[in-house]
Length: 121
Image (cartoon, rainbow, N blue to C red):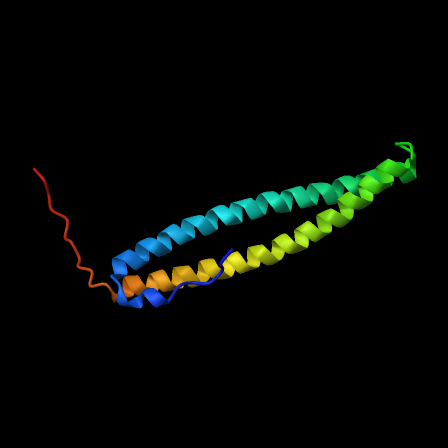
C-alpha cells in the first residue's frame, strides 16, 4: 500500500487534484474500516486464548495439548496482528491528515464567489 501523497500534480487543474484527493480519502476510509475489523479479530483471538488459559487453570475445561497450543497461538497471533494493525492504522491516519491538508490548501487557492440566495416566487 502506498502511503504518500502525490505532490507532482501541482501543474494540473486544482479541481482535478481535489477530485483525486477525494477518491484517495475514500480509499483510505475503506482501509481504516478494514483495520478496525482486523483489530477486533486480534482482540477476540487474544481474549479467547486468555479465557481458555483461565478456564483450564480453574478447571472449567479439561487441559489438553491441542487446546493449549491453540490458546497460545491465539494470544501470540492476536498480539502480533494487533501491533501490526496499529502501525498500519497510524500510517493511514497520517496519510488522511496529509490528504485533507492538501485538499484544504487546494480549495484555498480557488477563487470562490459568494452566491446570494434568491427568493423564488
